[in-house]
Amino acid sequence: MKKIVIPFIISTLIVLASCHKDLEVVHKSGLTTSNMWTEAADAIAARNGMYRQFRATFITQYPFWGEYRTGIWGPGNDGSEGYRDEIYDNTIQVSNGSTNWAALYSTIGNANFILKYTPGLEMNQDQKNSIIADALFIRSFCYYWIVRLWGDAPLVLQPYESANQDNLFPSREPQDRIFDQIDEDIERALSIIPDNHFVADRNMATKTVLNVFKADFNLWSAKVRGKGKPALDKAKSALDDIKKVTSYQLENNFSTIFQSKSSSEIIFTISLLRNEAEGGYSDVFLESISNVSPALFENPVKVGSVRQRCFLTPQFQNFLLSESKDTRTKTTFDTYYDVDRKRKQQWINKFAGTWEQGTRIFDSNIPIYRYADVLLLSAEVYNALGDPSTALAELNKVAKRAYGVDQYYPTSLSPQDIDSKILDERMKEFVAEGKLWWDYIRMGQVFKRTPSLIGRDSEKNILLWPISNSSINSNPNIKPNEFDY
Image (cartoon, rainbow, N blue to C red):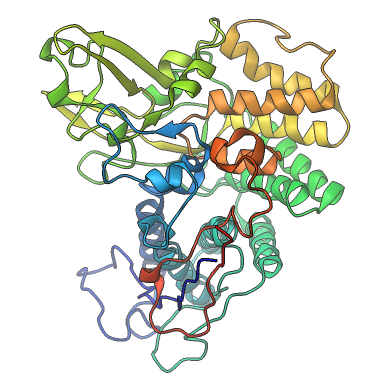
């Protein structure tokens, strides 16, 4: 049995990217009531800093935590040296950088400052409520990832402001306690967020963002945590509310989602901008410029500056190619044989950014929730509630865009078959969007569809991550996850 001795990292949880006035960095005790939280501008600056920290937390880790374990990813054309082979085959070691939860807790720390001090500021009530709702959303979203990744975890609800304050070395709280807090934060945020809060922005919390997160959370609670029909009903209610908002809809053309930053399908996204925040996890999806004939640059081969050390397995590529009518496939990935280099080039098209003057600029947004998610989550909810006909109707809306065929899935499918087709469509729809690991678990397929996990369902904590050694700071209260492998 693998033994890991790991305390908890007490990081500086007051990393705000900007303050008002002269942009001075506040040292020592950090952001306190006397030097920061005095006016509305302070809360606005804190919210902006929280979202920047949120982006920094997920910009590279999103697929490591949410997709690479499924078995659909493996080495790229340049091998996988120095990359996360152990994640692909589910033999994750404590030394792996993705086992570090510090960035998630730093983001939560930003939210905790906002939640503590914003209520006491004099400002417009709607503006105050919107900032508090943003913090509740970000905190609950981060805890949702923490509890699914590591199970029991510290539940920190107050900011760290002094080395002398209580609870500097928190213990891991039971998972149910964390899930209860997530539920409480979601409901509180929905109860106070103004209807018009950032409705035109797709990278901030809105009522629709909160509702799709609520649906995601409650569907997980129903299927993985055994919360049953009450959780399914909450998920359905949230999804029904989203469908009343006419500004969100499926794009007619799948590729438009990833070509336009103003796509009507995007509900919530991590926003990347040239000269502000570029990069993310997608650079290793493209071919290295040094391995491609110059005549093929961008026509058709997407090239980047680093070696391709991560790509879809041949088996999964064949799965995506299995239906010739599927219009999503070429947007998801493409291949081309480079005669001069005697090499089959391959690349992911979704997040290729901008090619300009011989340089790849990685400024593609990373979608977290989009309207196709609403429809497929809705199909899953209706099927679980015993309404397969409505489930099929929702599933077929996504299939119609993909295949150009009405009623692509027939009414003769059993509820079990419908669930299987929902997962198939999620696997084709959301490739490289960080969702599929959670889909596998939620739909009871993780030990059936993940090659490296077949026959391993009895292993202790096999679906959890170890806690990184770098996430420690002499905290004897943190006990490690133990594993049977």
